[in-house]
Image 1 (cartoon, rainbow, N blue to C red):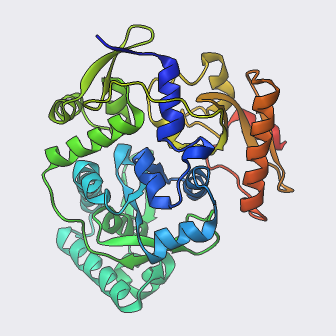
Image 2 (cartoon, rainbow, N blue to C red):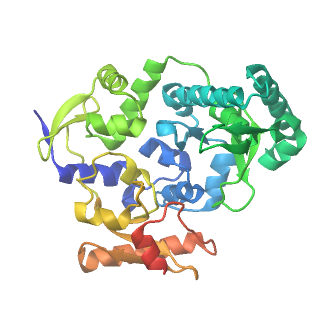
Image 3 (cartoon, one colour):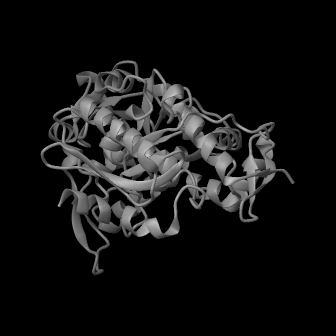
Length: 387
């Protein structure tokens, strides 16, 4: 069996994830396609991940792609998590993951309505959704609070988990809006605040074109293999949130080739991708929490020393801001209240490595400007650096 060692995996990461200066992109959609999908639970992460890979980073370019051209779109998809993908790839992600997420969201919400006991049902929900979409079509865009003011049904409150310790009264507006967004009937527009805000306005949109689930999953697997391969079956299963049968079916459909990884595990690559990737120049990067280059695999052993994990991850398994050197995670970084970007190494990278890391910190400082960034998922090192 052909072997691909850890060093080659790190070379592929630097080149294919557009992290070395010589391979950086000129557009945000190109970045999204290179890494397949960008984590977007934390609004700042999306912008930081893209700009780290752009030859000329800037928020104006990001906002044009997200809100003017709509060449980037946010979808509730893999692992029931909010991701941003290119508009060209979005129909595949919708069919491969987002539809199933939306169906589960609808089933769950309808169960809550039934348990509430006020006679609210699927018909009531359909009417509330139709009125919400109509308001957006008329206004162009609106925030959640503006929609609640305009649509009486959105001001309804229900009791969830009645008769249990978890019993609580909740408004339905956020659930209805989330469901409409999951089904592609509305989408997130410009935030109410700066680019770090997750309080979005909403606008009407058309659902993505339909395609067979298996076909879409094969395309997602193909792109993942190109960006993250070689990876294991467990890596792909974890990243997509699919079951084992779906994962194996997608790998077979795309014609994935099996290779041997360091340590003896079996990995998979895209068809015809056995050849070694040519090295890139030495590179450093400061990547945000939940960046795809750290979140693309369940097993990150080829890029992360086990004894570094406690400092860089929170208790739920979310990775924080990281410092990279030639495909390895070697430390963490943070932004202090006065705007200073500070970093700390957990591995020795030598003078050349430290100089390139400092250069990346200066580059980040320059385009972030007066904006202050606090990760949603805070880690021990990030807290220590900002104390």
